[in-house]
Image 1 (cartoon, rainbow, N blue to C red):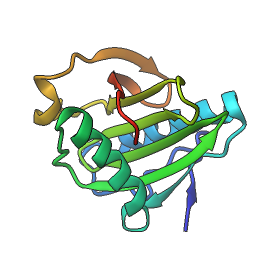
Image 2 (image 1 turned 90 degrees about the vertical axis):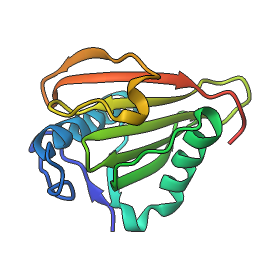
Image 3 (image 1 turned 45 degrees about the vertical axis):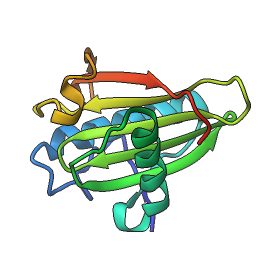
Length: 154
């Protein structure tokens, strides 16, 4: 059953096993606030065990596009369509968040984004491939992020 992410009263529910659960909860809440403010979309997540299709899609894109295999355990995921864009998020026990922005029409933007919760190290599988820029968030503290453009059809 989906859990609505509250960005006013940030909760670690579903993320308790993460060593950076508070920061990851803030990161998740930051995404929820963004989608509520920009698209009036209520951001909800499912436990990883109920979101295998979304997780497999995201992992397939990582593998096909950049031969990346994430070693951390997925805790939650979500997938939805807003403004002609399929969005998918996977939140990992390590504190990593991966999102896929996939424009449904040909020629629209398609990219994979990585966000690192405050307090976590850059995952080994990403460290040598990406530089991470920092951004401040009231909900998540300092977020480090990077991305790549998706080239193929998925």
